Amino acid sequence: MRRPANATLLSAALGALIVALGVQLPLVDDSFFWWVPKAMLLAEGQGPWVLAGALPEALRPDSPLPPHWVDGLPDYAHPPLWYAWLAAWMRLFGQTHTVVHIAVLPVAACIGAGLCQLTQRLGGPRAAWAAPVLLLLPPITAQLLRADTDLPLLLFSTWALVALLDR
Image (cartoon, rainbow, N blue to C red; front, side, top):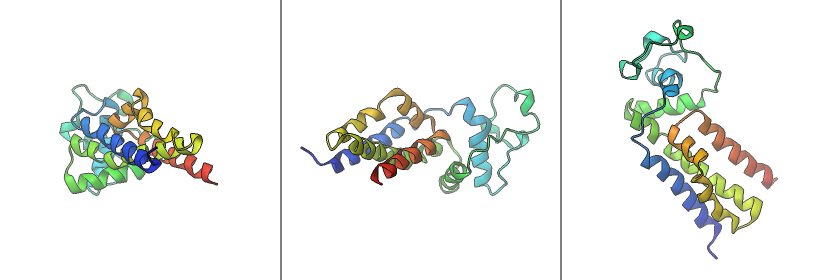
């Protein structure tokens, strides 16, 4: 039987591969309206609040903003970690859709490794090999391809469960 470390490496590589294969996918409309512009302005050294007039032209949808967003985009009080992560990548590599997806690569790899560790702790060394299958489940694959603010939640909750099981 192969060691669980191999399963962890496979799961991490598969998580990153899923994102790499979808690197040219467009970002969803939800992304255009608040978290990508927020990260872009943070990358440019501006404040965390994004006003509608400050959105870069490339990110403006064809239709006008909803009436309740005219005075500024909503802030759903997500912790700033995701914005800071994206801002760092955008400062280094530019403000493109591809960079947003590439910024997810290490997060996806850590999610894959975390799922492997979690399955190993719950079911033993053989169960660790189920982690790559879990990454291919449509809800998880869709989250990895979406590059959304839920990715840090998936990452930290997975590793928090691993830490709880280790206690």
